[in-house]
Length: 173
Picture 1 (tube, rainbow, N blue to C red):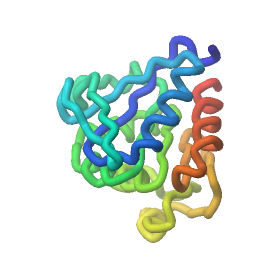
Picture 2: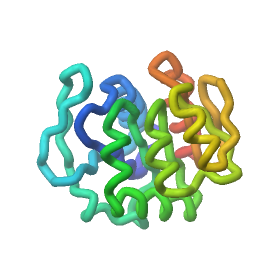
Picture 3: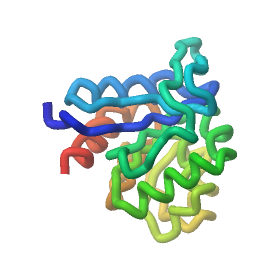
Picture 4: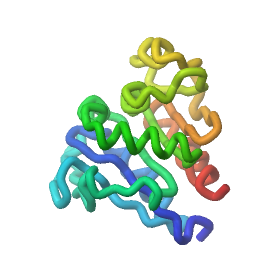
């Protein structure tokens, strides 16, 4: 259990990509991390694109960045909603400044773009937002997982094994 005692937040809103939420969450939990969901409202149920629900353990306002060891941002359509919350953008900035692992997959790059942390960074994402990532100052790679310091990024569900392993490895350091 190499992540025993680690606290991870997974951001949550409607229409997350089910696999991109559940796979890395379960992987981190298998290694002993405590993973909690943060959404706009504590206790609110959010439904993934394929109908799988997840319930927010905390509201965005309740998350204390100093108590968080890592962040997971799932893809799907949720990132377009998540990036509109100032508390989410501040959390991303705080964790990035602290060098804590931030995992993002598929469309989750939109959240990092809006947090303005991608200038000069190496990333990947779904090819559909490649231009957005590059316009934010990132160098984009068509690879299953790209690790640049504390940022761990992946393209889409087939990349989940490499992505989850890289995120767990980053949390272990």
